[in-house]
Each structure stands twice: as structure tokens, then as C-alpha cells.
Length: 211
Image (cartoon, rainbow, N blue to C red; front, side):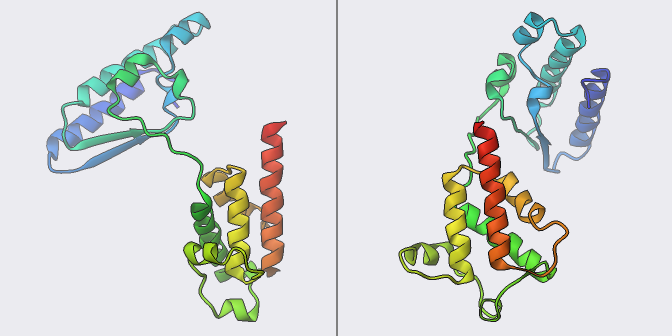
């Protein structure tokens, strides 16, 4: 948004934020900035890559804005980035904590698959068998304890796919989106059809990353 506009837009945003924080000191405000590298790319890199002066000025403006709001106890700022090594050192010096969020484990993958499967079931996109439709999904812990059994109920089928997704280090975002992408334009497909197509999409994504 800001790279193609004046850095005054960024300054204006924080000016408005300061106005709210000052007027409502008891109001807890959380600001999330996604892909922060678009605002605070390393100035050393920008200069060496002959980027425009406006790109460097944008970083300077962002750092100044952060200093302007630093004393507000009712403000918490979260930023996200997949390119932490590309961030400006002055920005990292202002960060209180850096959290490395890894790809979801098998339990998280299981919860994502089951949660989205229930939505698709309610929309009649996926149809469960008569037996599975009347039973709630088991917990991941229960499935894990039954992993050596030849059980093919809905919970175990989702569990087995979740384990594969975790081993392939599939991102939670991709898995969540994939549950709906693999059923686009479909109605009343079986659970096996859904899981097989989701698996195919996951494997294809992994192969594309590795190639």
C-alpha cells in the first residue's frame, strides 16, 4: 500500500492512532502489521540495490512512528514476516520479542482438517457415511492411541492425513485453504474423495516447493 504512495500516509496512520490512544487511555489497542518487511526492509540492502530514496525514507518514517507510540502502555503491536533476515537492524532493536512460529504439528493439522470438514458437511459438500454422520469426531489423543489399529472411521482417516501433512511441513494457511479449494464446485462428495483430493493437493504443493 505505502510503497507506491508517500510515506506521509504511514505518518498519518500513526497520528490517528496516537489521537485514539491519548483520548482513550483505558482502551486496549492491538495493531497487527502483516508482512512487515514491506515497510522496514534493511536500508543497507535498499541502498546497495539502488532502490529509490522513498523506500529508505519509508523505513525511517516507520522507525520514527514506532518511537512516537512506544510510551503508550495501552498499545501492543504485532508484526509478521517470513523474511526476518531482511529486516532493518534498527527495527529489530525496537522489537521486544521475536517468536518463531513453526508449521503446525499433526494435532493442529488434525484440528484444521476436522473443523473444515464439519463446515463442508453442514454445507452438504462432503457427505459422511451413515455411521460416521451420527458420531462426533474423536480427539487427536484418542486417534493417536489407536494408530496401530486398522480402523477406517472418519476420525482415523483424518488423523492419518494429518500425520502426513505434518511430516510434509504443510503450512496451516495452505491446509486451511486447501480443504475448500479441493472441493470447489463439488457437491455431496464422499469423505474418501475429499481426503484423497486434499492429499493430492498437499503432495503437489510440496513437490512444487522442492522442484
